[in-house]
Image 1 (cartoon, rainbow, N blue to C red):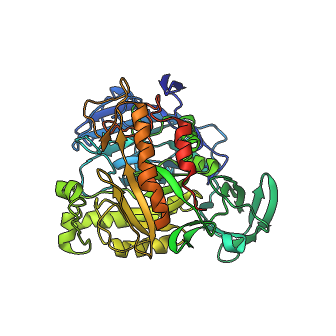
Image 2 (image 1 turned 60 degrees about the horizontal axis):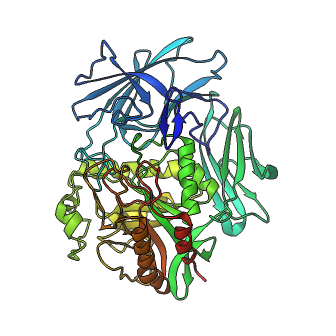
Image 3 (image 1 turned 120 degrees about the vertical axis):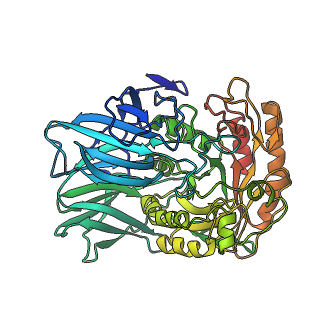
Length: 576
């Protein structure tokens, strides 16, 4: 056992909760826990596994039991033996990996069954080599954090300031499920808010002969139907209950196709641009709605990119609600699906960033360009190199990852906005890619270039303001968004994990921090409501390593601001 935030974590059975609340079957066998492990510089199978690692925590983390610095030439070797219950196999067994960074090969009983590249998307393997009794599962991984090809987020081999310790190897849940021979591969759920209906489409592997879709609300059936020849169905919900952060009501969904059955849920909500006092603003369910939230990096001191537990995630999200925030910007990371399900349940709207990549970013680009008002285009060869996308394979990988990212998160009710690029990091062809993204998902809004190097694309005039007074205006066509601001830092003694400290403005003590935050909102944020501001993202939820500008310390043990104080500030961020 270990503790995180004062709570015990069972390292033999970590993160054992069902990983896909929106696509749930009864069959579930979790492989998280202790695996045999070895690090060397050879791609050959090791003769000895000299260490034990706790999956799904990356080897850089304390909870993994390893705490090693992984180099590009290193090979990470994982091995786990398992024996499934006798009645487990219903026809096929699927093996799921929620997250592995970065290039890996999967072997079952000595046979290579899958090759994966990337760091933030899940993959599934059909276990044709499964045996009765004892089975051997091996995973071989390499991770070049500084690769210009693959997404890396905030990971850096030289962590300092806004860049953090890398994450390598398996860092998401590994699990098995048994399914019939013909299976439901994917559900696509579209709440048709203006029509009072829900549309469900299914991708089914095989010939669909029997189907049933049942919708329930608070356990009571409100509609049922079968799929048509196009494997779609629309169900009228009548006098439906809309989802809002103040009333996050969810509908239950049961889908049966031949022998396969999946449980899911959805919410009746709509995200759009609406007009308020002559300005285009964010609209929730066809009404003006102010999004007040926090930048959320999703890192933990003992666990890196992997949440320590479902309970830990829920505690943190409930704190967000207690402080009066109705939104989080999930920054340069994709969370486990259980995190999004908690946001759905608790009523927290999410701005979801795509994960950035590319070559190392030039200091002039990051630290000088926005303050010298330098503007770069992003669709020419010279622009690609300047913004870190000079390698065509890097651009191709980003575009290749777009569709699976959208598909993975499409049905999540709480996600309202996609952020395509942040502060020019690996930015390219933003106008064209906005159109690509719009075709993939026409139900959400798009912040094409959050921060700077705006090309006029997307739904937001999106601004980041640090070090100076907030003086921004919209363009009259797009929503005015303050997508990052604040960043006021306060180092709490005994709760800072590094001597390298970073912040945008330093305060000494909780009282001075609170007074500075209050002044910031009163003098610089509130006045912007009359100019059409409808998104405000304060930096940030927690400290992260040397970045000490969170409302909580990195260990989550100390809040730097009083909850009621922050809730009172947020209470004024509403449209009348």
